[in-house]
Length: 118
Image (cartoon, rainbow, N blue to C red):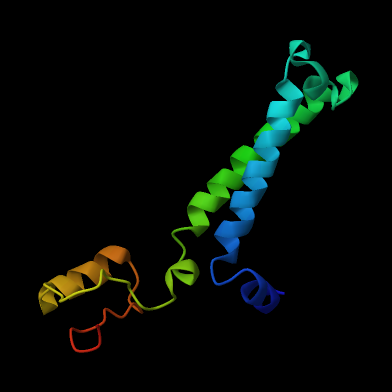
């Protein structure tokens, strides 16, 4: 399943799906909270469903946003074991490279050397 999602959506499929889910659920919560003065837009959702649908969709949108924030910092999303640095000549000396890897809390990260980067 993961391979299929990576092929269809790309390597950042986790952030894509949670982002779309958050947008859809937030829209649903807004529709459920819409006052009847808005006319037809507010009557899309039956009145007996509005309160429950608002509560569930707002809570689910909040949870998905938290998940989105978490996976956007995931090593899988950022490229696995390669720490991405801005393009151009690196001004980081070896001791700084080691501190950068240590600060990231990941011993398996690889910081590209100057001769590898373009």
